[in-house]
Length: 360
Image 1 (cartoon, rainbow, N blue to C red):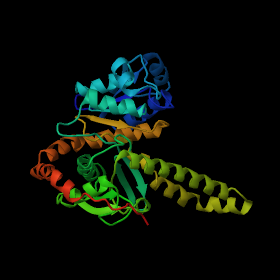
Image 2: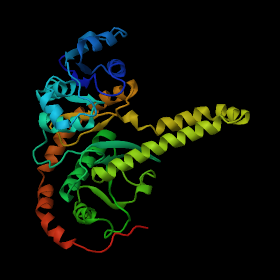
Image 3: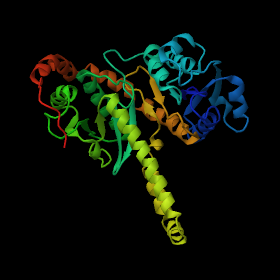
Image 4: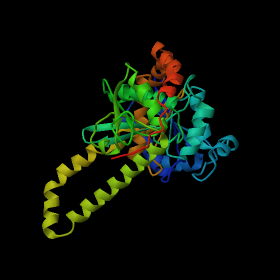
């Protein structure tokens, strides 16, 4: 049992806690014999849910935490004052190296603040972005940043690109991930000051596969594997993606049930439709990791169900087995990364441009 990868799970985070969190954690134990789980939360509530299941008690421990950080609470104040909350206690397990990862469907703000204050950033990382996996026509891509830093500098985006490329190579298995910068056009001179400053820096990096700018409409087509942007743009893309997917699925179901003839057709296409929908379900890849921390912190959707929790826990095994945090740290120390940092001021001067931002 000493070789287990222990993962701390926030049992009180999210709309469906603790029931879905406990169910998903037990399912993860059943799926892999290599993990142990610390279920962090109100002991009575968690224990009550655990009574519904049979599981290997040697690989699951309830860690008491009597407070819960609500979605509406100011993140910084909550992290500082609610020391006995499930988020704070769970992250401390990672900081103290008792757990290799922390998974939560709780407050995004509190998780972001806690990740930086408790787990800590890798030395040299300026900002820690959230990397969200979304489905595309030919697989998946990573949006980085998708929710952590709404105001970013070009140096941040450069690091996002490097970390995203490392994540997609080792966690998803894409050998040379195509990295693209979100913009309003394909031309290098398009965009705002942030994208204009960032483009030449990414273009100069010969250790990532930078393919240029990408427009939002090209993302679902799978034109790139790593989508680089600040969190303001990234979160808008992500939320629009989720909302549009829900509307389309609802319209398809409504159409298929609209008449006897369509219902018969629905029965005929059900197997193929089910497979297609499964292929387009990015939750099978787990939650969204905070990249650039000393330990792994994974944020799952607030409405996460048992299957989402299971996949997020199992995702941690992949992250840990490939030592992605270690690879990010090593990348920061590379000679190439140092050269790019030294060139930034010069590039900023070269890319100052007062031309209007015009899209197609």
